[in-house]
Image (cartoon, rainbow, N blue to C red; front, side):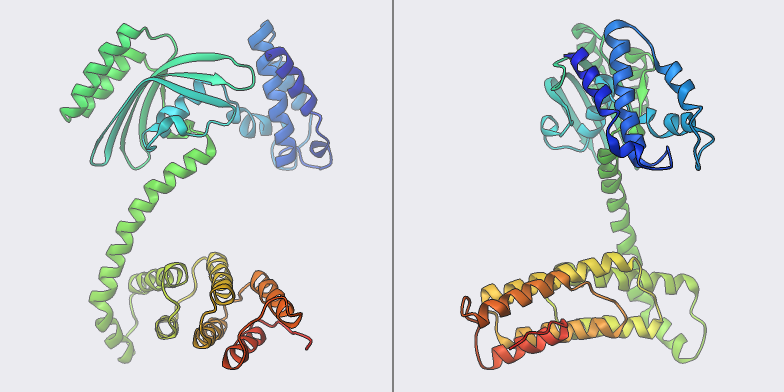
Length: 389
């Protein structure tokens, strides 16, 4: 299987898209170089032939517009992405700290089965220890790893894995580390891990990219939520003070203005994601934007959020036969957004609206008449959809 997989990777490294472009560090060439790297890995693993140094030497002759040469790009962009069972074990151990059911964690071409796994949580700190079999779905190669991993908060993860640890040794480490963690002696947990694993450590930066992003997002989301509460508290407590300063033409401190900008932008995102689309609430937010002369943060994200919400609202109007005043309110919401210069991408909503009107005109779908249809046609004008009657 490994020899066949080596041959498959060798064939894939000649994928045509990697040869069309003029920069060796671009994503297309990096992808085929990953195939080459994998083929070299299997050659070393199966028949103990190491082609890597010679391969790098050849790549050093390839020019690059970004790096010194092709070898520098390869070492920076391709080599760190190489995966073997040990790296899979590292990834699994760190990700298991944050997963409810680690065995369901997606591992690409690998699967994991726990012989033993235990996780303890004490406030921010977490500790996980396990003995797990990892198997390649491609080559069927399988190996057992023992691991222990400690989360200290923020991005601080200290972990160890070993494929050589005997079960009796693992059980001794398990008893000692769990007792130390429950005894709140984190320093002793780290000391015991070093004794048993003899320094083979890893951190959050060893995780696969997508899982690394997922965990870092969990961490930052928690911190940002605290920051949001703090900003909102300062905003509420100092609103009248800032208003008085503005009326007296006294410059408002930049830190206050930044805080207001953050709160109002957060309110805008939340309004279109979670709340009922009430015209009065949107008017309040628009008033705040103009009053404090603040700018829209991450306009593209807000445009996408608004576009998706409007599409959802129109879908509900059509399929749930919502009343005509609901349609009128949505039209006012769109006009209000246009008034502050946020360009909404209406293409999905336009397609949905156009399709519903065409079906109505053909008699395939009957829309309500009277005030409802008048309001719906006005909404079409706001969406810039022209229907030939």
